[in-house]
Image (cartoon, rainbow, N blue to C red; front, side, top):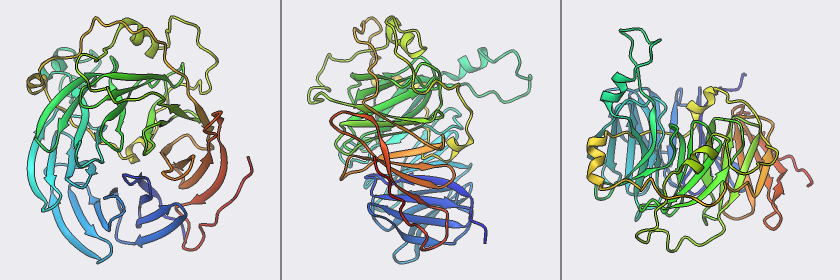
Length: 412
């Protein structure tokens, strides 16, 4: 019998489980040790999201229909129907966020009551991040360009009656899902945003633009720029970013054949103290476009940007809000601050057999877990003292039949 096709893959919030949506149902795996713990043949699953290691899962089988299911009891907790297709779902112990192309629905997860609806600008690429933390319960998403600007800057090649969707900006809006208020706007990049993630505590935000050459890390909610990393010199689409649970490492995968691991070495204790915010500068913007003022070493992943359909499978969603709403935040970060450091290179890296990946870091060992678009699950060891290239130690598949997930061990 033919293996099902892979529709969606995602790690849960603490990376202890992997959820896989296929054309013939869904599967849930423990990541350490790797083993299947649940399997269902209920339909063609477009999106699946877990709530940590609980039996609660959110499923999208048809575009506008969300099902919250208890896998242990094999029961449906609730069903919700939306006015347009659901692009992404986010969960933590306090909130459920459902992202449509032009709206965000926020629910109290304890009773599934609707708390807030955020009208947004069109954003079919669905970029956003919800903090796993119940205390720092922030959601971050791209701030769109004003709708009036979208009309005035309509490209000349667009047919008169066509629907033109303006790209998102490089600014991030941070929204508190407990108080239901916007708390900050962070000017992360000048190019449109492509990917972002929040750490386990909801205190750090990593961002990447469509250029994909520079990764930045900011404190949340203050928005102080803490780190600026160089992924490569040539543009590449960022597929996945993930902090480890202690927020000392950041793992980034892209359309290139290299996964980068960046080290966050210094303390963030004073990151949210007033007056410490840094903003974009001509120097940092030039760095993002491969025009650093100092020589840059050989690039490990000098690949041209690729358009991967796999990006639709990643656990990404977007929330967008007009500047009129964002104006209540107060002030934007200053433009006149000059950065004095060059982007840092990776601490460690991994060469992968497939270029479309979702990544996460082990909570109990110095290992990176990689899932590829063909269903491969790879585990790589990282030398935490010296860095350098990681080596493959285990390999599994998430698409073969039962009892066929045998490990392949490799020396390093």
